[in-house]
Length: 278
Image (tube, rainbow, N blue to C red; front, side):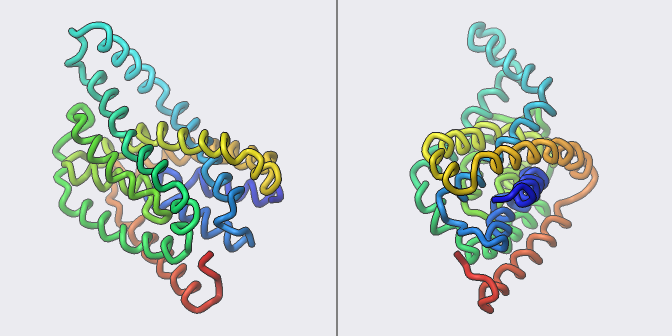
């Protein structure tokens, strides 16, 4: 992979990681259009590893929140008097909500890296999950806020997050939809989606580094992977700030419309043979 491709894919990852449009779906489509074999081990590893840039952007942007949550969680572990504190409960909620996707990701690792990367799945998932997002956006009461989040909320959201292992569904789209259906407001579910992204994306990237390091070296190359990760970090930081402001005043309709158009385009290209599915 050359430097320009790495910069381009890193920028796309950073821009789409937290938007409910599926970063993995976008990368899979673009990697295919750039001539890469999308189910090759080095490409699947590259796709997962460069998400670390977005993770570090999240850690930097929400550093004060994470510091507060960790402090409250640590105090609560040591002192029972702190266990009714909202930040202590939210800390445990994030931990519990991160477990399901880890278990499912390990159990179905081979299918996720091969079968589900077919553009048939990507296009179909983009369209089908748009219906779920539209329904959640329409019926969500938004009467509950971040301080009202419980471990039951994040466990449900964490289970739904597993659907995002299918490229095209979108991890943020899944978590946001589940949060809205639990009655949480859009800003709360968006922030919660950021919090839940860190364990999931870091674990996925670490697994790929440990198991596919040689594939990366012999294929895409570590220089391109590192460049894409750095670009992902820079773009994701800007995208986070924009998304929080946008979601506070708008529904998900613009994202739903975009997903439907992109999904239909992908299915058309595959169905007509212009682009192969794998």
